[in-house]
Image (cartoon, rainbow, N blue to C red; front, side):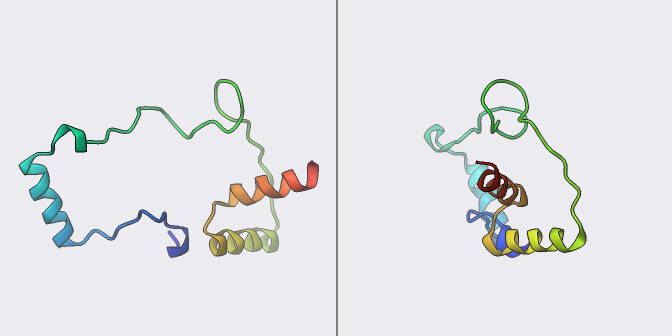
Length: 92
């Protein structure tokens, strides 16, 4: 993954960090320090209602695909975010 697209919470795992985390885990954690992510499948829904969000597939020429990729890298966002923003600006 491109460095600029990594989440801000990304941490490089070194041998020292892995060892420290393993030591902490073996020692145990107080229950109030344990965070359990909610168990849901897939990505969060963008649209209202139930089930998966509607999707649209579009074929791009090489130049447009490269422009989209470079913009996403530069802004540190997903390509789909840019496409949604562009469609909203064009259609609304």
